[in-house]
Image (tube, rainbow, N blue to C red; front, side, top):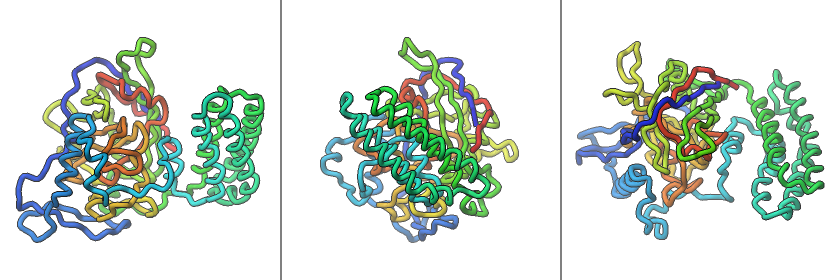
Length: 421
């Protein structure tokens, strides 16, 4: 899916409508906590006059703090970092969080092949090795390459056996290219050519990603019946977004590659693809760039989302969250509402340029067309342990030129040239 976003003019950023949380205004408003079921539609509604669990002080505190940060773009209440008042919401972190968007997408694929992961991991670890100053980094890189080469030789048969039947020939060719490429990387290291390591690593990880894509044999689960008539993306797609860049004399505009993940968010990603194909985002104003998020998708006029011409009403989609370890997403409820405080999402807010749907804070199913990209970590949004995970639906990542995302401005448009894979 190659969609181009072109920026035509400049205008002041408007205040965001949907990402800023609001608190309930009536004391009689209660939240019914649904029973957790990952395979079925989950009901979570605000009800008046019925017995249920009232919003606790903890939930109100979360919303107030989140609202302050999302509105101002400034991490709120430094004291909370030193003495977190909500320890049960912190995710248990095992090892350093994965922040690379490409790696996050690879691990999010619906596959279970240990052999290919044992090749993937040391190649990804090269990025950490390159943080060592000078040519000393190459000693660590060499260990990474040898580990990956050894894993490939030992596990090649198991990797091939995990390929979808119709894709085995292509997968085997990719593995041959990967093997040759690792030999070339080994020679690069032996030649002490540090500058050539990162480009070669990127090439090899692309081979790995393509092999893992070829392990997926069809869509892995049934979308709930009530959402089957919505636009769906059953797989992945890529879209290119071209925007103006501010305050950079060497770069007037930049193209961002965004990968949309329909394996883990078929309804959310499908909604976006449909809007791209309708040219909905063409000439859309970028409403917010504040160092915390970039947000757009609010059309001109009174509407706050996409008006479906077939119904003449705003089309909204359900909150859709894939929990790590589950086979299908949960719908219409946040993980907090489900009591899954320590659960990790398959598509976390770990990477710079994480893409998600904006919505009203206490209306889980209010997302329509407004989207945002997360730009920074803070006390409230550290990788692997932030309060955005499980509250907003992530459906993709910016995978190229994401470092320039904080400098975009003006209006953009997307041409419906989509690359599906």
